[in-house]
Length: 209
Image (cartoon, rainbow, N blue to C red; front, side, top):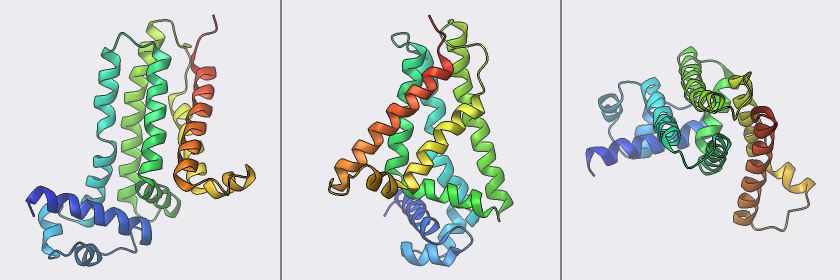
């Protein structure tokens, strides 16, 4: 196994254990044993469990800046179309990477590790700043309203997606979708969530003609 493959394997193993047992409940030895590597490997690649968690976060969110930069350069799309693409991609990513998002939710609720909480705050600030650039571009073009609370806007999206990710069985039962096969239900839920958030964002962002 190459060095890169070992690095990736440790991240995947840590993500699975953090989601199952929580950050505090997972030891470095747990990760090493589960991954089938010497415990010294974790220190070699990451330095500490906290740094391993930081690397996991960076792996999951690091693409956002580049994605927004590419969208800003794309003159073929309107500002709201660019935002809608980000919404679709965010919802799809959460549905795909449920383990990672459960870790983030749990760590914020438990609030026992200041280093992780501060890291999450820094990531949120970076993301809000990046998305803010896209919104500012829409404002300059006259497509978006002048007063937009970026943090509140993102909180609406994250809140809706998180609640439905955690309580998807509740949504399934209420809408009598118990007989719908899991893959079909996941896709249906993903589409409905994306559509709902798009409507909210459009109402909050777009100038009335």
